[in-house]
Length: 345
Ligand code: SF4
Image (cartoon, rainbow, N blue to C red):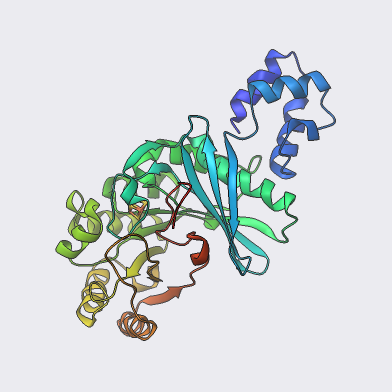
C-alpha cells in the first residue's frame, strides 16, 4: 500500500483526518484485503479509495503449497504485466517468515540460481517490496493459518543493494509500528556483496540483520559462482564488513550453498575459516550452510555427510555454523529456485 497516496486520496475526498487511522488499522492490523471490508467508511469513500489507492500493488496469480504445508509460494502479477515470486515459510509451529523479492530477475547471474538465469527485467518499487509482506498477512488471514508473520527476509529474486533506495523505503514501511510493525531484529537483508552499500546499510539500519551470500572464500571460485565478486572481490568485501562490524557490533550471517566438488572440500572450509578470522570477533560471524536445490544449472548438491564434515571444520575453527533447513523444495520455493514464471520445473 502506498500510504501517502491513500492519505492524499482521503484528503481529496474531503474526509476528516481520523479516516486514515481507520484505514491504517484495517489494512495493517487486521489485514483487510478490500476497502469493502472497512464498514466504518462511507460506501462512496470505499469505492473511490479502491480506484485511487488500491491496497496492494500486486495481485495473486497462483499459490503452491508444499506437501508438509510449511512453505507457500506465490506467483504475483505486477501492474506492468511482469511477475515475481515470494515465499511464506513456517520454520517453527507458530512463526512464519516471508521471503520477499526486490527485483524482477537479477543481473548478478549467480551460476546456481534460477533467478540469475532470467537476467534483470526491472527493480521493484518500495511499495511492491513491502506489499509482499502485506499480501502474506492477507493470505494467512484468508486461509486461517495459525501463528504470526513476524519475520521478513530479503532473500527472494534480485540483489537488494542494487535497488538500495527502494529497499530502504520498504524497510521503513516494515519497521514502522503504525504500518507493518516488525521488529528490526526480525528482518534480514541478504546481498551478494555490494561492498559500499554494506557500510551504508549498517549506518542506515544498524538493527536489521545483514546476510552475505558468500559461497566461496577464494576469488577465482567466487567470481565463477557469484560474478559480483569481480566488482567487489573478497578483500574489498572484508574491508566493508570490518567497518560494518566495528560500527554496529551486530552479527553477520554468511550464506554458503554447498556444491559438490566445487566449494565443499576440506581446503574450501579452511579458506573460509581463514577469511572469516580476519574480519572480527568470531562471536559475530555465523555461517549458514545451505544444501543446494537443483535448478537448471550444472551444479550438484553436496552429500549430507560431507555437509556435516564441512560444518564441523568451520566450528572447529571457532565459528558458529548451521545447516539450514530447506523448506519448500517440492514447490521450487527454496533458496535459489525462484524464477517468477508460470513454469518453474
Ligand atoms: S543468488 Fe541472489 S544475487 Fe545471485 S543471481 Fe540469484 S537472486 Fe541474484
